[in-house]
Length: 291
Image 1 (tube, rainbow, N blue to C red):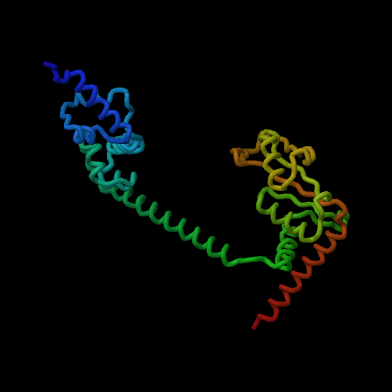
Image 2: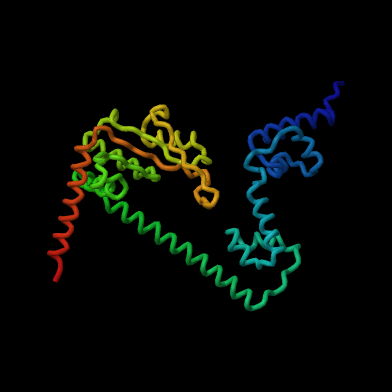
């Protein structure tokens, strides 16, 4: 008579194959336990040994970070409501994370008032910042497209505010512009293109403090101007004055870009003439509106 009894080892291997297949499909340990009817944690652990858990069943590090931050704030004396507001999580989660810590002593009324005032100011600051963003975005959208005439007049005003001017005691009728704002430089170059200035007439030079990252600044400004770094003239390095405390020392500091236009005497005269035309037109408009 043939013995058909299955050995315990064979049963375990068959069960392990099922458990591994479920694990690879993304099942959690609880789901595998329910599917196979395995209640022993030790057996369940042996069945899936060597198989990594599904990504969705992993504990998120973000929640661990929140928990540690909540406990730190509790030790500093913050209430559940304050921790909830600070971290943006539920009050029940805060309670679960910090309930084993001692309850902080009640703060004096004056300190509570200061904290309440700080919270109100933080809310007010956020509201004001949102108002700023809204006002700027509304004004930006209101501009719409610029006509060539509008761009011409804008460029004239921009040059007269930031560009080099001719003096009676030193005739320098040439277009020479410098600025540290990349958007201003882009607008100026767009204006020059409108006026028919070809790229071969442009000269560029970076002006920057000698202690800054000159190479990085040159790459940045070359990209803004749309030219190769090799097209830039030798940088103008500003000597450091030890008596001066510089604030523009962070990574965002890239100095200024100087833009020269060769053979630009006639263009300068047109720009100056247009500027005084704008001044005269504005004065005439102002006169008509007076009562």
